[in-house]
Image (tube, rainbow, N blue to C red; front, top):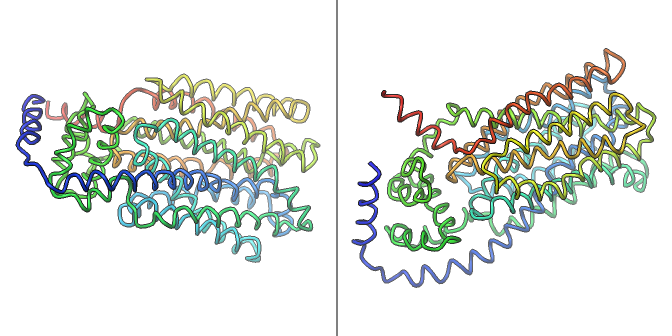
Length: 490
């Protein structure tokens, strides 16, 4: 069956007549793409810086916010569960919004929502208003979370590992900066927690700027697709395959064309998967109707994402309080959280690059989880005595997040597949993570200590190892589903 497809593609390539508009189409878009690519890179970094300060700044001031709003431990646990709840509820909308308005426009709107929510939240008055404003900011974070791997795959198809590393490093930097600086800035601004939380709205407002010129842009090659005559993509496909760097970009363009223009899915799809031996010719064609819930790899990745998110949000929401209850000063507890988050700055750049070079990412998932187990054991036995060591180990463990993002880009072979896998893994994962922070708050309030909550955190590392091994296997959801479809008739 492969041979007839190859002959058909060759015939299409050789019989296509030369087009006079080709020189103009080839000379203008590269300059546009070069300018837009640099702008996208800046936008990715600034957006990533704003994807966690709304959460870690609150963790640093959680005790002050609880006192100011009159929250119980259980309500505070609910508050720390709001981020994954919003990520699950709003993240699933991201692919549909991106198809309608373009990923850049949705991320731009997300940055606006973050800035607005962080501005309103400290002065909303009362717990319901605080939660509503937090939800607005978290909605912007949710859609941006889902679309970052999509934007990386579309704009940098041959640099997924390095760009995911840059994005993850900026995210970790924003996370740790908010954790470390919120308490000192609060003191410098007069000691009110409202000002300490609201100051981060300014950082989000700056992140809106680089996305504004890209609002109407749907990705690299979109200008070419709008201006080039019909069939131009098929003419350039063989030339793109001869050039390694350009081949990846052409494949991403054709996969996107298949997603956005169903009428041309067959032609674009056959060229777009020429680099894949497994499932050739079927991946882009199946991308539009990809039944992601039938993929075992997708489910493994979703559960892995959920378990690492559970640990991350428990850490961001409760770790400063654990240290404060152990006798560590509030400012030092904030710095310890910052150290945990700061570990992601170098490692979030290194881990995706290493993972992208490996056929199986399971060993990395195991190593990170073992660091988490050691850190939680230390937190249980000597929370203040070895505080810095436990903060470092838990910081290493939290780098399962950039690993999960990298695997999202590697476990799908098309732009449409990455969008669906990213939305499914993140939305399902965040749903899985919702009970964790809430349960920690309930256990803390009713047990009167941190023994049971820490035991829960450590216990979650065991299933995280198992699903990390499954999610790290060298396969794509498209080829996995194509193989299952092929054996179904038999």
